[in-house]
Image 1 (tube, rainbow, N blue to C red):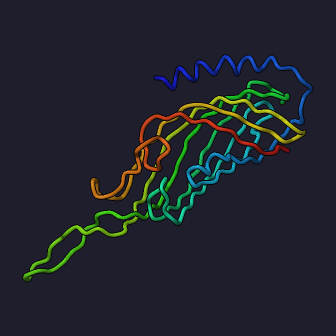
Image 2 (image 1 turned 30 degrees about the horizontal axis):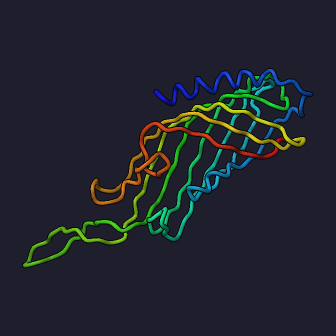
Image 3 (image 1 turned 180 degrees about the vertical axis):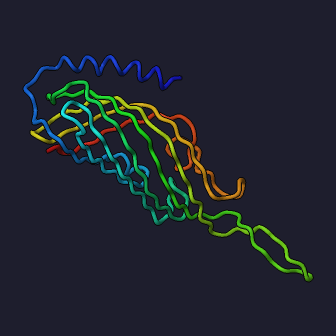
Length: 212
């Protein structure tokens, strides 16, 4: 519910931005951008924007890549790799680009992570002529599948010719599943930035890029 009130607070600001008057910008049909805050979670995201009609509707395809091969105080797993993609239907509130362009966007998100960490694994062993299953601490691989969706509101600024800066905020939901037995591994679900998080969350950040 608190996420909903944040969106209500931001919406009037976005609508007010429509009153900013300036000369029209180049009416682009394709854009490419990066989202630098993904580096916090050892990731990289690139946004590909495609205009899908002659008005103000765009399709955004945002592939994501994650990689870390050494543990640290912040991320204490042994290694991690992952991929993901977010799709957005983006609707600008102005038909033609100006210097400041408010918009809203929504769409699905999918992520896959492969995490190597120390945990309890099941091992079979023979003793006194019988076969048994026991637990031993060893490195294990947890595969995490995360699905969800976002809805965001943002302001798209043209700074120099085709160069833009985009600031956005919104809310979303995630559902995470993994391939390991409950209780024998890390959940990676301590807070909403974790790989295995399930629940509602706030999304937001900046991106920058160019449009053609």
